[in-house]
Image 1 (cartoon, helix red, strand yellow):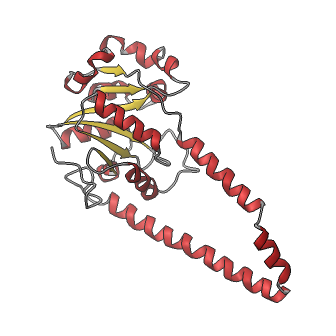
Image 2 (cartoon, one colour):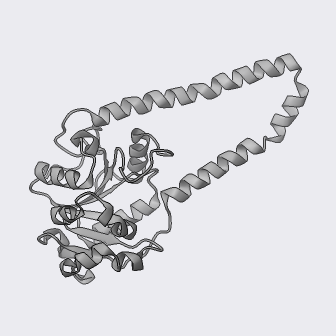
Image 3 (tube, rainbow, N blue to C red):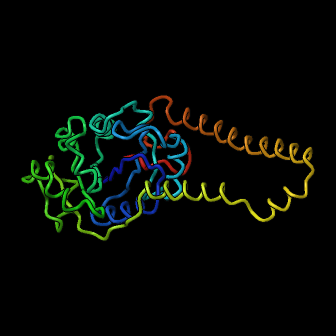
Length: 263
C-alpha cells in the first residue's frame, strides 16, 4: 500500500490542500493521502491558531474519507517534531510505503526543522510547487545537500519504492490559496460587520426606549455568548477524543467512515 502524508496545521484546510492531495495521489500512484493535522507546529506562533479539533474538522471537510483521509494520529502518537512522527508511522505501519508530501515553501525551511537530514532518510519526499517559493526552494540549502538523491519528475511514480534519501519536485499546476490569506479575509469581514451595522439595526435602536434598549442589549449578549460556549465544549470533547490512548489506524481516534484502510 502506498500512502502520501501531507502534514500541516490546516488553519484552516482549504482547496489548495485538496489540489495538492489529488495531484500527488495521481502522479505518485498513491492509494491514499493522509492529511496529518498537527496538534502544534513548533515553528508557528500559537496566536491565531484555531483549536486542534476545529482544524481537524476543516481537514475532514475537504477529504473524502477513502482516497484522502484527515487524521489526528499525531496527537495520539504524542510526537511533536516531524522526524519523530515519521519514524513512529513507519514503526506502526511497516508494510506501508510512505511518501512525505510538502510544498516548496517548506523545502526552503527544511534545514530549520529538527534533525532534517533524518527526515530525508525516514521517508521519500515529494515537493509540490508554491507560488513565489519554487526557485528559492530548488536553489536552497536542502535541495543542494540532497541533489544526488533527487529523482526526475518523469520517474515520480517510483518514488514510494525508492530507498531513502530520495526526493522529487513535481512541476505541476499551482493553487494560490493559502490559510494565511483565508484568515486575513475572515478578519477583514469581521471588522467590516462590526463597523457597519445594518439599516434595520439602526432603525430599531432609534425606536426603542432607553430601558428597552438596555434589556435588548443584555439579551443579545446572552445569545452571542451561548454559541461560543457550545463550540468550546465541543472542541474540548473532540480534542480529548483525538488525543487519548494509542490507536491502531490513523483515524481510529475518530470512529466512522474516516478510518484509513489498514495496510
